[in-house]
Image (cartoon, rainbow, N blue to C red):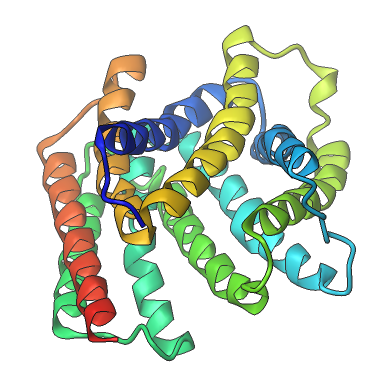
Length: 297
């Protein structure tokens, strides 16, 4: 892996902005579309740049191979469920809160990795990070201005969505010998297949005329944060490694709060800022704990 250059830091910031921009665009998409439709259109449009890359690089897609059940399960847990839960929750929760809640994924993954992997166990630094990070989330739920009895469940569902990403990550270890492009393309295909009947029978979006901003947001969600962002992430991973790429974890909630304020004029309370700082500090400690483990190997 090469030493990061200026262009690498610029690309890292761009990746963070793209993923952070997903939250306020999901909010705009909910003005016209139901959560199942938003999830379906995300994976449908997101599959386009990934499958095109596989075609031009002559990478075989194994969505219907003997390992199809793994691709289907990962697509369900890593795309279908979290995309649906986030879209459902954001209907009644500010997008900046969703950005903070979803940023707990590195904390949740550390907990699951301790029990389901051999080399990623807890240490003191990681434990401190988890306690600080989730303390920030508990503090956020005490914000009666933004989270009340009307949207408390929605906030919990978004938090559950972040956990689903972790479960999908654990399942991905079962097919870790396969190319990243193949895995991503295959799980996007299965997510599209799983969601289509629910869209067709439950929401039937073609029966209504969507707002232009909602339509633009849902297309953007698919092509950019779901498709192009993955390609950019893969470029950063191959050039600079996982530790460098993982720094997006700190930037996404920060940019998510800022973008929600700029584009949707969302309220930023003192508790939002404190919980944001706590989550970022928690992620920092967890990452430092991971770095210590890597040095010991």
